[in-house]
Image 1 (cartoon, rainbow, N blue to C red):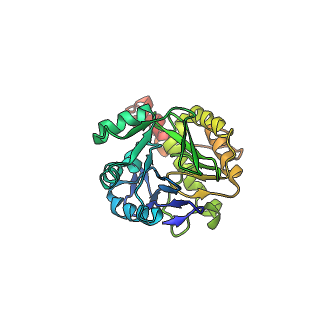
Image 2 (cartoon, rainbow, N blue to C red; image 1 turned 90 degrees about the vertical axis):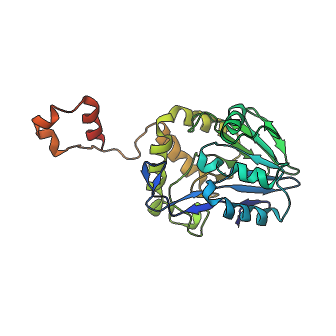
Image 3 (cartoon, rainbow, N blue to C red; image 1 turned 90 degrees about the horizontal axis):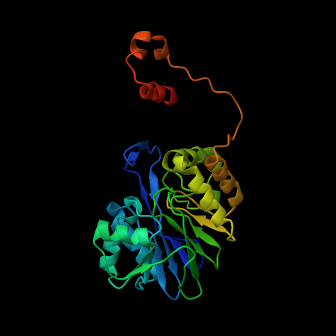
Length: 279
């Protein structure tokens, strides 16, 4: 558990055991499942973590909340590495209201059989926690259809779901400015975007246009670091990636020795040849 502001805490966990993210992409440096607690007059948890880490997650929440019960769970994304501890959290706090959009609540009912104390929100809906006000807006296909983002007005924090995420465990630091991000993590952020969100570029640009209406002073993603400085730099990177704009101009020559073997090439489908070219 780490403090982000006076009332907002990081309560996520690190995964240094899983070798393949979504059973596909290498986790060379592990990964993080991020979650946050807003401790105002009401206590809100923003997303949960992979169920295998539920015990450590619960301990982090109790510390951040000072032993007070959780009033709301905000669900921005239903992928199991972020929704996996919903049932455990509801069991611990049975009166907790689960906040999500229509698609999210449908999935919660289907995944976890939870049908009570659900609060449906729509694009632009707000929720007051006391001195803190949350605004929700939909960001479908960044990168699942139910995704939404949550903006906390007082401190200007955007809880961005999987957007602005990054591969890699957080080794003591939670803020991007506490590490040499360009040297150690920029490639992992680019690789994360390309593999997880890349094909939904138009949806990403649409979400970024919505976010531009807010005064964003901090970005809290569900994977990787919290951004509190030089935010425009990372947003610009996302805009380039989302619009398929080269970061550097150059020429790539793709070559594989198998291309010279006409016997093998003749047995491959066009799709297999394309995969070879892209590998």
